[in-house]
Amino acid sequence: EMKYMIAKNNIVELEITDMTSEGSGVGRFEGMAVFVPQTAIGDKLLVKIVSVKKNYAYGIIDTILVSSDDRIEVDCNVFGRCGGCAYRHISYEAELSIKENLVRDAFIRIGKLSPKFSPILECDETECYRNKAQYPIAEIDGRVVCGFYSKRSHRVVPFTACKIQPKEFEGIVNIIIDYVNEKKISAYNEQINEGTLRHIYLRKGYHSNEIMVCLVATRNIAEDISDLCDILVGGFMNIKSIIVNVNTKNTNIILGEKNYIAWGEKYISDIMCGNKILLSPNSFYQVNTKQAEKLY
Image (cartoon, rainbow, N blue to C red; front, top):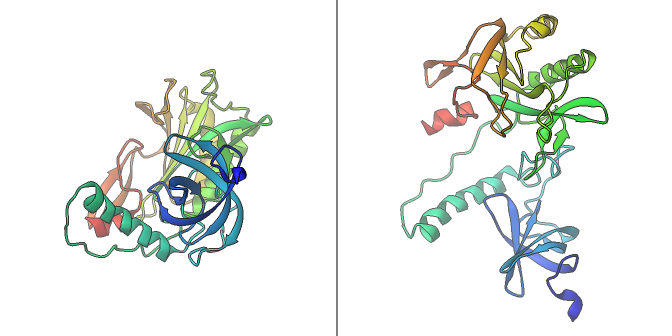
């Protein structure tokens, strides 16, 4: 019948049989691959087609007819709108097996090699494990907010209670946002290249618990935020460093070259495999410390 053709806005029935590295499920309709986010292998679905290319199409879930055994209840209010997590709707075991298969696939199918594979090493902690967070700033309805970009866009989804960031980050970010609104410090707008505050960038030593607060702004606001520093340091004993990073360029690179100390130290320290590491805002550091130590 005509109505089952692959065309934009049409609804097709699909079984998800595979997963992409970006975390979209893949089903085949009349031989054509259809990519559908937030699905799981084993899902049987009605899918609404949103775009059609020459050899593949993109769709979104219209109805779940039969739910995959891998599905779990989603524990985050912004999952699906936020661009952060791809696998929050499936069990950790399912996620591990997808990632293990991606690596095998890269070697065997793409690389035409046949190495012997060791099993994937899971992470002991699946929550609050990230040692750094970068929250873009935007103005929505006259209020400065921060959160995370939605997928493939620079649209900010306001959110501070992220489950994969250290617990204190939420409190720190909320204090900063309240302060910024009270003091009328403007949000940077990249369309017109105007405004002051671009990002809130937080770092925490996994073993040391030391926290760095870095405000990325278009000018040096270190002088303007001395009372913010007092509030933050009073509320969070682990804060060792508050820095203003100045980025004047109209770019999607987060950090500029110049750092100004607003309070405390130039660095925080952490321990990595028994070595003391000093971290500045510009340091590269694996974001999952425990897993990096296993890797090294």
